[in-house]
Image (cartoon, rainbow, N blue to C red; front, side, top):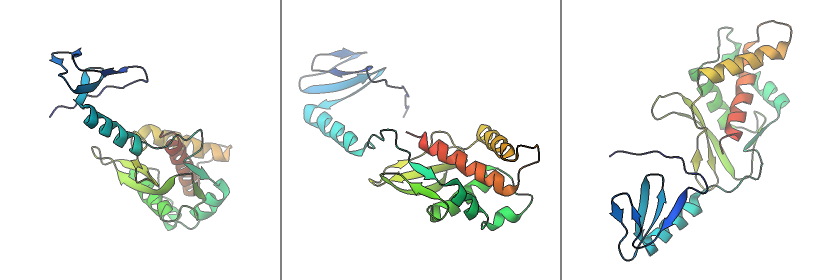
Length: 195
């Protein structure tokens, strides 16, 4: 099966009614459809209505600018002091270490200084389906799981290391705790930018 991807803006999808033509196909009597880019989803009016209602029921609610997670930086820093792995001076920011760190945080976000926003049920550390890279994820109270788009990658790690370096302000290399603190702040931003 070939899957075609096409971004749909708010005014690019159109309702197709019986007799309308799209590409090489024509909707027959009692068939309605939604045309977008080079794809048409079609069926009976009842089936199309049921599909759209199902989609609407499962779409996450509008956030109206509210954060999905809110971080109390001071509490997070205090929590990080208890993470044993960070006592290793060779600890570095990489996908495996961040995955493990976020798993620990997800077990008790409140203890780590993270407050979950309205409608967020819990956090999880997952691996991307295709690359295996670390992917933070949230689950909304309706059961919808949301990733952050792209997994944590090299560009993220560069930004994290720069932010951790800025904590000192005097050119000294950041501590492992500062690296972890910068990483979790960065991940929180990526989560809040997810949708």
